[in-house]
Length: 575
Ligand SMILES: Cc1ncc(C[n+]2csc(CCOP(=O)(O)OP(=O)(O)O)c2C)c(N)n1
Ligand SMILES: [Mg+2]
Image 1 (cartoon, rainbow, N blue to C red):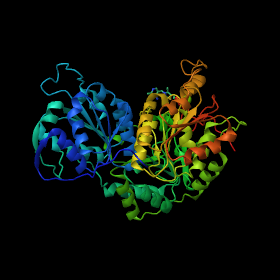
Image 2: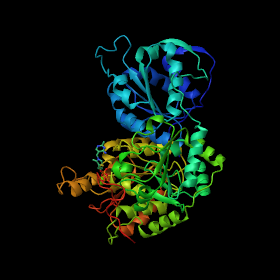
Image 3: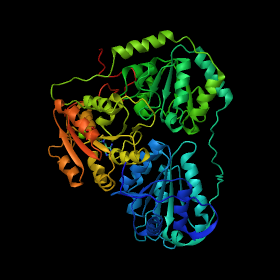
């Protein structure tokens, strides 16, 4: 990756010394090993931006604060390190609220610094004042307002600790302008001690033994692997455990890549648009081992029909998840990696699952994901398969929200961890493109493809400025179905084909839009030209926007309709 921004050597100096609040922040970021921050300046945060100017710390200027925070999320998801975002008070801060909520529900470690008006005027409706502590209380893992410069180093230390340990999440630091200007002693301790916050990492051995016994008794076991496997860096242990115990695996949407998608025992994604094999396996299982998943409603469908005959093991670092949606027989509170290591140590024996596994193999062969090809019309599913082929499945894929997201989850086979970046819990349109920018910073050498809907792209398209400025080689593929495809699908199926505000008779010229930012723009509308276009896109050293006009009325199948159970999938077609 070649960028026009030069990064100064970061100094990590923890000798106590006198300095301003804003200098403390930059020093602390260097101490935390932060190599890039995403942000946007403004009045209340100006002292910090002055320090950014003086120190040359690597700052990426977004063109809307929402772009900055989604980039920080994409960076965090791919690198496993905390994403850092700095914005000003008032509108700058409220513009990052969606991203904070997104990071909270998808457990992404972020440290978000918002400028604030001076402590002397807080609460007076001062210019650009917004109560960020009140606003973000329910959507942050923790938040702080710095009331004096003396407490600032401790707060920064704690913020990074809280964001990255236990179940990761976003931590907000609200920094009043006078505090950032005040001078105090900077002593960046290596120790951190937050009373009342001691996440349980190592599971209880007795609970692990109960899992071992349950596995040896089970005839129809299944592992449901969620994002916790990725956050806990537990993919290798999961692989080893599955190979040893021969238990089939289902991934959640956010868990994709935590187990190789091309493995014999992988049954696909579960849930609303998952595979028939995966959902039926959960439905028929006698033992369901959930690792780092949270049984969200898009996964479970109607709870009354969810895994009705299964004993449930729930392994999660967050005790609040256990029993939240599903009755759990064997709770295991702890880190996914630790839990799997302990399960491997216990040396348990698998039950007799041969028949169960052969049922899964037959179903996989009989009910694959399918779509109908249609001459020169490009089917979106086919497009995703072709992106997979053109990149040998080695790319990082980010998506927005909608049909293209589900097709990407279905038709791109994720073989490795941290190659899949999507807004799962909040379902945030506008996420995918800026997240790709953050992903590219996390992995400069890996191709990053942002697969985005024609509507969602328009929510954060201004971030093409970052690609232009830094010559960042992100490839944008717009899956253009000239509609809010997922909304259109639901209106077709559940609202009597009344397409209220979901079709676009007129659209921007996406190619010209890219060209306005000096980005190579391409358009394809015939299948025979698609392969060549994808190759041209991938070979181009800089950023590219490729608009692909796809079949407009294609729907995502199979599907569990709202209120239905996992065994009631529609659009399942035997091969
Ligand atoms: C910020 C936001 N607003 C509204 C929605 C509701 N919504 C979900 S999918 C969707 C349509 C997305 O259209 P597009 O980006 O073109 O993707 P497609 O479904 O066509 O692939 C909408 C409006 C949302 N998820 N996020
Ligand atoms: Mg669309």
